[in-house]
Length: 139
Ligand code: HEM
Image (tube, rainbow, N blue to C red; front, side):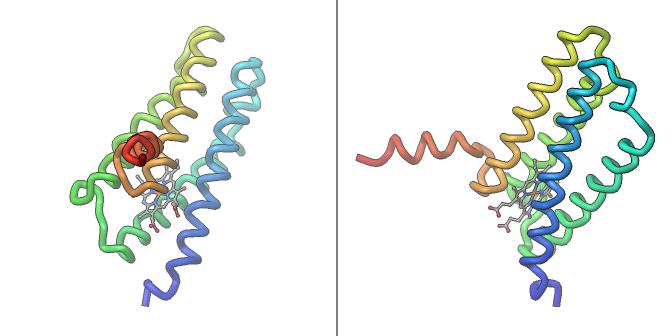
């Protein structure tokens, strides 16, 4: 029954990925420019709603595909990198004391975010790096 909604759930997941990445980037840039809007209650609530929906859709996708974190390597990688992304995101938005630390944390968080997308698209822990491996095998 759930399988019939695969495409809708996938689109919901990917839509939330776009919104989540965009909102994080916007908040991190506001934080870097010392704008208090970065941690405004409304934006924090919006992040929370988007990220909860993203994860809810992720869980549904694992059930539809019968592939799970700590069973399938690419999904384990995603979960571990998601934790790293959250830690870096918290540093960028809250904990970092200097502007330089905020910029570094934001860039690191966005790099991890982009890598997670590679892991999702490739269904492989190596993510985008897999493209290098594959192309080097071709004549
Ligand atoms: C740890 C929580 C997450 C889990 C368990 C999870 C799980 C999944 C699953 C099962 C799929 C379906 C793949 C398919 O249909 O073949 C998927 C797709 C996708 N996920 Fe996640 N996801 C998670 C978090 C994320 C995050 C944080 C991002 C972004 C940084 C992300 C980006 C994507 C993208 C772009 C796709 C579409 C891939 C494609 O259709 O080629 N996911 N995810």
